[in-house]
Amino acid sequence: MTASASLRRFSDEIYCLEQLHSLSAYYLDGALACQCSPLGSVSEALCAEYGGQCSCRAGVSGRACDRCQLDYFRLTALGCSRENTHSLLFTHISYFVASHGTL
Image 1 (cartoon, rainbow, N blue to C red):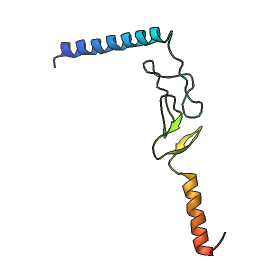
Image 2 (cartoon, rainbow, N blue to C red):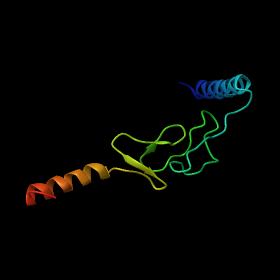
Image 3 (cartoon, rainbow, N blue to C red):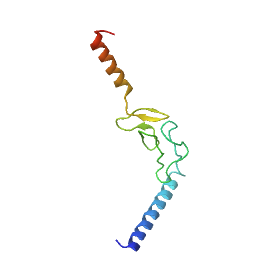
Image 4 (tube, rainbow, N blue to C red):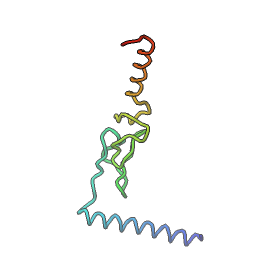
């Protein structure tokens, strides 16, 4: 692809994004608020101009950063953790019962 064709393609993509943004804003009677989760997002007030994706903390996903990624657990203000505390607790209790015969 030549430099001018590449530039034209880039211009077309920008134009399409602008038109999509305008059409969506018209249809929705204005732009949607960010709606970022106070726990899962880095900032409740900042999101992507196109699509409204919030900036998520570690292990967090979703447009609003409101749920844990696959294999991550327990959404907190620090993000989501890889350790499932319920599974760890069950493992410790099972080990204790196996070792001692009872709780």
